[in-house]
Length: 202
Image (cartoon, rainbow, N blue to C red; front, side, top):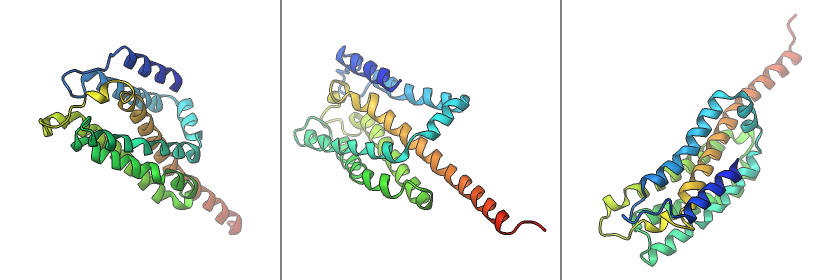
């Protein structure tokens, strides 16, 4: 399914479906970004099989994939060449780089029940970065009318960021927060079992 989603985003980008010559992120990009998130939410809420599948995903491997967000430095380079507006590129670039730089450490050190709270906090920071970037990208032309345009984010290769990577990474964050919340329930159940075995009722 992810492969089909990527092919759609790539094909639509190649056909300039997302291109917005008004120099801002348009409705086509917004729909492409929101649609997979809505589909995921509905599917997760209505399908027990899909929920079990999502909860079975390996949090270490997929959290480590967030290392890809180190490519956020591209936003900084493009801002320096006045291809992207600073009001979007700087917070989005530095935020992505911070998440990308810490992803491997979080994946291998915090993705376990005893570091549950720290793991959730990092996931929430990752979500905050994505939401901030989307919000600033959408309003950049309003907040900085004389700044560089957002046209580059609506054509290849950068159009794949809002239409594929952002919703994908956001979904991963949500899944792993759900997993981490479940760790406590599993751990509490295990501890109750241990106490029952150690101190059986007389």
